[in-house]
Image (cartoon, rainbow, N blue to C red; front, top):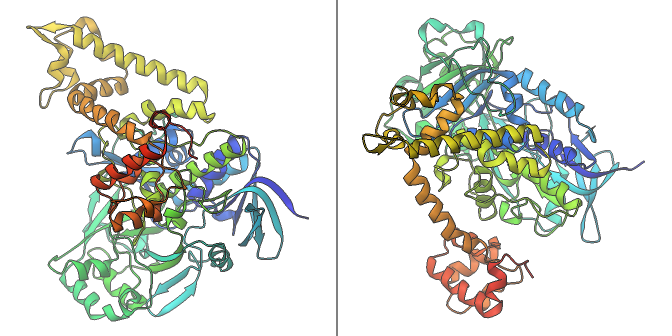
Length: 614
């Protein structure tokens, strides 16, 4: 008997979990289809969440009502705040987590969510009726009908794993590949490509001599990722650091022809910012060593993740490389490193809602869009799940702008992206990163989550009270003068701390305010001028965001556009004039020509007011 749901989410990774949880909480009847239910929420690679740019994504997902931040805080075993020597705009939180506990906690959340069912099976085809998606077809021929389908297949689409000359079909060790779905999408007119990612060996903790390693402690009292739970406090574990040397590099060079990346066996391109150890040795021949982090995969496991030695070299070469590291001379391998290449579908084929352009009701999210990373996948899944549920309810699309959130930067980047390597989030991708800080995600987004129906009113009320306290405190500091200068000016001095104000104005009882309020007051005061300048830039650009470009716009007919601009605009189909200006190959002169063409074709006042696309 054919089962019927509002939405089917295909894939139980981080994108699939956030998509299915968000959609179900918004009232949709959701089926999460996955190869194995016991791998829902699994951390396929590193046992960590967050990092530069990525930590902001986790905080934003949490502020909007997503799951990743809370599950991370429940299962974290170490936190580290990165870039503490730099300004708040680029500081990010990273957490080591217990991999087993993380997956279990996410599975419990999935099972406890109303209107969310889990179905085990391989999805090999799509049902299409009357020009829109209508469900999925499993490998056994059974069908599941749905009004919308969200594909979050990760590395499983024609996944092929490589360790030296050995090749195995699958998207992850111990699990097979999805063979038919790529062909189904290609037959429906979707453009595809191949990408590659990799993972390092896992070693037995008991076989490592930690006395030879540098200890890497974490934060003693971390804030955590979630805004809805108290800061995590428990006994934290340590990570350790070692380093490669010239002898290891020589061993890799001597065997480089046996690496499938260099023998030609791998077609896909890997992530530039997370290279394999063989890539590091080849690309940086002047380096005499590379840092390697030894990270526990959990509290009760013997497994250690060897961060920095992602590789697809043959097993015997991996053994030589690892046992050449200080502290690892007697290392016992639990799992060899491997590379996996897989199909993806370039994201210029989706809208900022993550719905595909040429098949209504079908959404893509995660590595299927050419991205890398748990956090990027979760962000896409969350946005796809929210938009699929809202579309079925007849609500307006949920789209965040680049000045609102890193999620908005991610979505906007992807729809005008033609990746030749996996996309990864960095703070440098956000031009308004001073506004989009790790510490203010709740102030930016929690009320948005409340309006969506994913954040409870009590939490949002607490947020509003916090904002009111911050604003009133800033106003007080602007109005209180000492020696002819407002107190807020003291906070603008280099090295100044809010505690400097305690003896100057004891009657204000600043020390009694919550730490998070004091931190926001200090940051707001320190960067007031820069924040105002960024806000003025945003206001100027917002008018361009309101100029909508109709899908029927024929760029070939616009006189004066350069050929490169015509090709890029036709390929990426930007939705706004501002989005067109952010496409590589489209110049300010091209944007001016587009503006003239729009004025000639449409009523400018209706466009500037945000009129609907024709």
